Image (cartoon, rainbow, N blue to C red; front, side, top):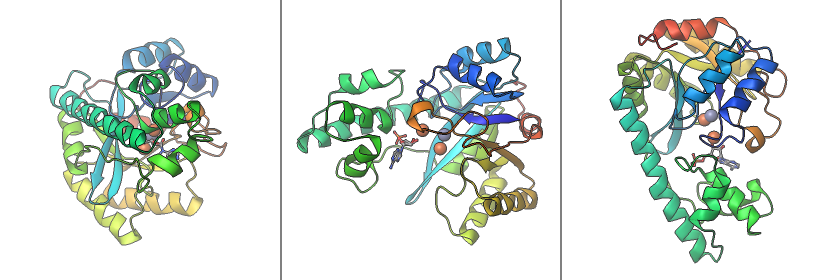
Amino acid sequence: MIDLHLHSTFSDGTCTPEEVAALAADAGLSAAVLTDHDTWGGWPRFAAAARARGLRTATGMEISADVPGRTVHMLAYGFDPDAPALAAAAEKLREGRRVRNASILAKLARLGCPVSAADVAREAGSPDLVARPHIANALVRRGFARDRADAFRRFLERGAPAYEDRVRLDPEEAVRLVRAAGGAAVLAHPFSARFGRAELRAFVARLAAAGLAGLEVHYTGHLPAQVEELSGLAREFGLVAAGGSDFHGANKPNVRVGVAYGGLKVPDEAFDALLARASSGAG
Ligand code: AMP
Ligand code: FE
Ligand code: FE
Ligand code: ZN
């Protein structure tokens, strides 16, 4: 078993890279990849801890992308961590978050729910990347929301009064950047963008033409029929059937490393199949 989708304190997870590696080893996994949002800052620590426990790993990141009206996440694996264009794109995404976060805090202040940048920074493990869950946690701590879900509903989700969009990459551009960095790109949780069936197929076809390596077929909450549909698409377009739990620690309660709610089982072959599509050799 493997897990190719894990978050740490370097983005919006609540476990350190070392803690995530320990959980992966304890789950009996053979390979695990840290895929923080828009950063691979946790990679040196995760790689050292994972390898010390006999786990195989590779560089990883979950890239924020979008198409008109829809958010799309692209996973990157096995890229060269020194590739300048990918690093510049990730920095642009993090800068977009900083601009977006400031705007959200300004809106919250106008709504009579002031939380400071320092409040929010205290909720984040890494000052480099502050995400909405950190702002939600700060709202809860200040007493402006009952819990994180309440904070999203009342203030932070798309359409809510303090919502603000942020800079994202075009998904095909993301695929090309990952490939240019010697990595393999995978479309994350393909159902989360809520494309219709035909739309999803057309989108996957477009990404496959740009060099997509895989689809996140195995994912927390995917029903057997959904796994079947995605497996069919992967076969049709010659893509790797990848997968992972999207573990976020306490920010996604009940989702466990390797097994999600207990039923997730990502086949070992996916790790080598993805690395075979990556050209950097940075496995
Ligand atoms: P950001 O990347 O800063 O825009 O924040 C997005 C993250 O917020 C996602 O990765 C989710 O973990 C979390 N999130 C998004 N919508 C909700 C929601 N309605 N309730 C709880 N968490 C959410
Ligand atoms: Fe997240
Ligand atoms: Fe995601
Ligand atoms: Zn994720």
